[in-house]
Image 1 (cartoon, rainbow over the protein chains, first blue to last red):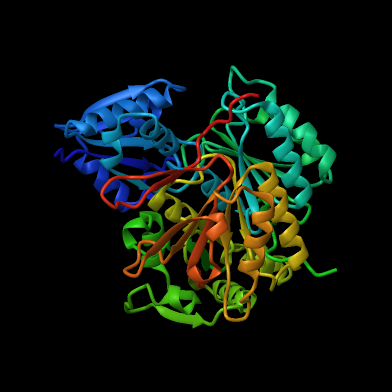
Image 2 (image 1 turned 135 degrees about the vertical axis):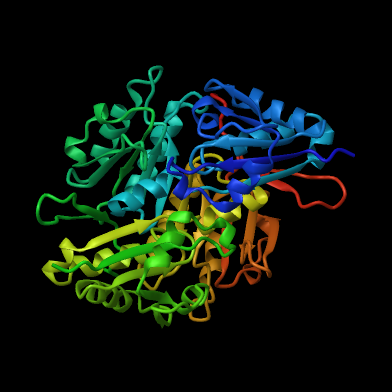
Length: 254
Length: 254
């Protein structure tokens, strides 16, 4: 019987002050660190810690590697940014378990939540996710673009605030522009859109614009884009302070 | 010029190991603590800390109180469970700002994110929110029930995993049953449903059932209910261990 384990961790958006003690404790006892290299790079070296950083888009290989190491006794920490369960490594690990060796189902696997990019970005500008909301990955590497379009239309019409993950990359340059164009057909042009890049990091950049003026060039791979509902409000502030954005809790009965 | 401030905090689901250092630091310097009494009760007493615990459903009064205190120099911490931006106090505070005194717009107001009930519950069972997902409050105190029905139908048909907040209360006994019935008409009967109550607390209780058998009696005010999509998987485990639930990252192109 092996004493190995896999802890699938969310490191939060960047600032260690937004990382939970539970996650810190798991990192402190890990023998092996697995993840996309910018996340692995956030964890300081220490004796006894082996690092296995890998490139983007090899999530399943990474997941199998973690399970193989745990099966022979390693205490593996699989690291993601934000929350590990949100368009990150947790799903990939369970996918590897399902299609992998039967013995992997008996492994000690724990998922430790983190502050998601979505909630960190929302907190920075106010409370844009203050009523019903959804999260959609704009990456069509793993699902057909037609499904993404259909989902965007459904939630925009139904009044959800929308958080867009993976808005664009070098290999996916046009998808965010197409999504914004589609949303302009379903929502009023003055709905606020928030572009939140590298939240809590030194190069944090936040832009708030009406949907009619939202420009995909404001996003990069580290940007979380939030599109308000028709009810979302922008509160102007004095003295050039950045406005607050919030979505009221209620809808009046008609 | 007042030096008062409002920090709107998410305390996480319960276990302090899931509370961020940023939130702990804000609690340590607060002069006044405002919130629904079970959340205020989580914070230990200390000299110099005034406590203003209130009952449920007085969010706007509470928000105004926080702003009034900050306007005369208090360092106020407004506490919510989970994440303050998710069906919690952040939206109420900005609503009070919008409709309150003009000077409140110049106040130092910060929102500090927390581990949401949704992500804490998801982590406990695997990765049920591993693809596109949404969060809906089932409370019809603040929006018409017809809007809730329309939103549930839209996201179920479009393939989102659904997290239901505020599934029921003494004053709202039938809404969860009605929601599950509606979802049974839109989704396969074997879609997994997770009832996660009091996650990370001593009386944590988790039940996983197919939608056809999901029983509203499994929920109380502290329950987060997650309804899978047709793609969500249940991984059985040996030796009576609780199965894992996860939603695969991708959808094959057809």
